[in-house]
Length: 236
Image (cartoon, rainbow, N blue to C red; front, top):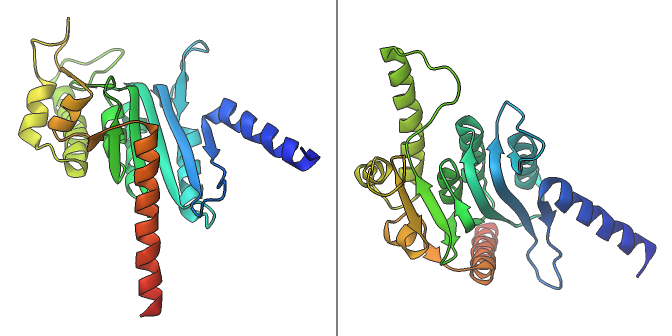
């Protein structure tokens, strides 16, 4: 292996370790795919403990902008195994992914809970492994809460933003989503619903059950379809 190749592999490994991101080698294929992982807790404006696995939104947002602007990257694959986290940060990531012009696919692995739900549905197509889970519940807030009507109005506004985004990017309607969110007989000491694998598909939140093979295949299909459209438009 040449020195240049060794250096590239070293840089690749460091990038995966530091940010959970990598642009996959073409390996003879025409399409170049960038991989982003959303793991642990989505970190917002406050730093979490050093022992916590986190996804830092200030790392993800610039990378998404770079993907959109890159001529070398054809599509984005998002792997999710997250417990949720900061609402504003999670929605920012979801909105950025949804606004990309490049084809995008998401794959829910261990879980995509809470604010992970909008991120999972923000892509053009979504998958969940058979044992993957999604927890849907109302917004929570840490710290001191002032018990006045304005506080509850603020909670409602935040919840409406999340509900509106999810329902706009998948096939579940608002009434059903809110019904799952306010379920009292499923979660211990909490309200909400846990969906496992095929249940998330049946509810219309995720498009299909599958793993990395299916997710990769679908992304290549979406990329090829877009390239064909672009070629036909150039001929015109």
